[in-house]
Image (cartoon, rainbow, N blue to C red; front, side, top):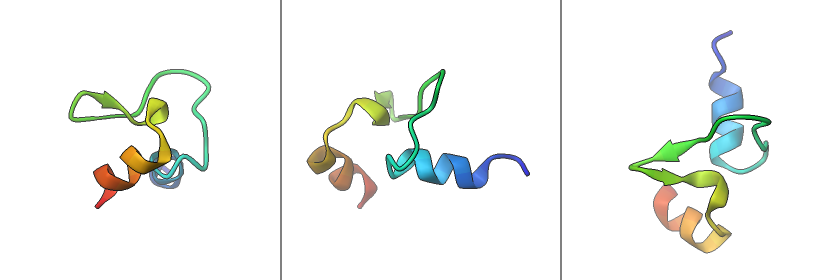
Length: 42
């Protein structure tokens, strides 16, 4: 595959990438707390 499931798990913070970052609109999703991440996902 091309990593669709891995990307989805990373966005939900179910999977922590070993390198690189997952960014949305310039914000690193892995550094967000749950409350802020939930707001971004809405």
